Image (cartoon, rainbow, N blue to C red; front, side):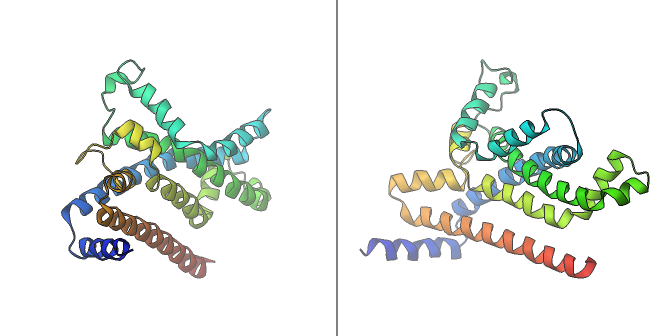
Length: 234
């Protein structure tokens, strides 16, 4: 029974002393997840906005598929990305398997449907509200899309953060394509799994505390930014 309090004490000691291993793993996690969110957002924002405004046969099917992909199993995504990036796969010549780049690809694939589906819902609601005004100004479809994305930018921040939360907490896909190599591809989630299995509870707990603190801090900062902006700009 004394093991848990002792492990917690050692975990906070590691955090307070800015342990180099802890900082290295946390830094890599932020770089991988941040890059994956940026890449996924650059594709998901325009795609979600286009899908919200487009009208074509089979649109409801595309929306249903997109919504369904929000719950993609991470291990399946990891397996598919592994097959694409493996030596015999179509992207094998890139040689990025078991590197942080492969982990970014896996995370981007995993969170793209989440961000795109949330953006689609937000833009569709805004399109219904502002459509007549924008059409009366003879704005093109691309101009309408840009206007709606800009007008809903603070709400869309929540969609992007939802993707970030999923990315940084992911373990299955990055384990498959990253290999959990010490000092190269070991991020917080894979390190927690490894250190727990090894019995190094202080480091696992320290990483868990940092991971939770990062997610909470980023979400609180986003909510504060959104509330401040809404109060200032209406």
